Amino acid sequence: MSAVTARAHPNIALIKYWGKKDEELILPVAGSLSLTLDAFATTTSVELREGLAEDRLELDGLVRDGEQLARVSAFLDHVRSLAGASGRAVVRSVNEAPTAAGLASSASGFAALAMAASAAYGLDLDARGLSRLARRGSGSAARSLVDGVAVWHAGTDDESSYAEAVPAPPMGMVIATVDGGPKAVSSREAMRRTVQTSPYFSAWVSSTEDYLERMVTACRAGDFTTIGQLTEAHALRMHALIASTEPPIRYLRPRSVEVFDAVAGLREDGVEAWATADAGPNVAVLVQPQGAAETAARLAAIVGVDQVRVVGAGPGAHLLPEGCEVPPAPGTGTQE
Ligand code: PMV
Image (cartoon, rainbow, N blue to C red; front, top):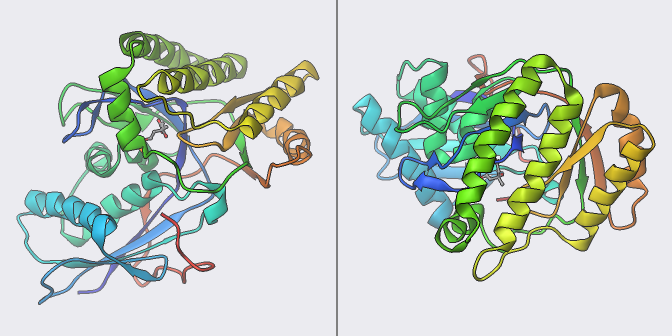
């Protein structure tokens, strides 16, 4: 059988997902909201191949085994159980994110895999079904199925936990890379530790629900200032929460904090820019299209900011026409 190929982009959350109420189904403790980017795509093909004893994973040009293969294979097991199929597959995947950008993401990876694997195994899923499926690979992947701004409804069970589009004003991001190294603690492990040890956890859940409601209203109203204020405040709440775990975890570096300060300086000069950061030191700055160039120039001038990239709102995961193949892996291809 020929391969089915799909493409997906990472997303950056404006209202963050941090904490699961069900580890197996990947149900979050609260909803979240993100912007799908138009850069750093992952392209993934899935080819069912008879006679294979186990799945095969080629990531960025290298054959992978161990934990990486196990995670992909567990995801394919779920797809096979839904499809009533048993055949093994060859998965080829290439990330366009440079390793140093810290954006080679599980969101784009599992969104592209959900799209390609469901088609390869003959599952006929609607948009909601695809988002639910991607969620089982990595929570944030549920949102990369959606064009532009996506709200992920926390839900109460497998069926009700999915992402869908929210209308929003034009916006983009300036990504400032301050450190491309691997995370000290994975988001999976850090979330678990947060749920188990932070004394602030219940306040986080209720404040996230409140912020999400206000964020959806602001998006629908096209109110960029409120979107920005909520974005930055919610990111800082997440990092404060993470710092309150035992033992503590801190993802932001001194340079990351400098970027947050520079963004506050931009606002004082009349540029509407608002900072956020995921489980790592790199900072994504939310801007309107007219503020992108000045923001990029200001951040590029900070010593220790390695790379600055302007990105826009991008499409949700989609299948590529038959015959399209996974591109060659860029560089040495050792990203996670
Ligand atoms: O989906 P995961 O397990 O990679 O977790 C993503 C967590 C954050 O990026 C920090 C927040 C978010 O909502 O994307």
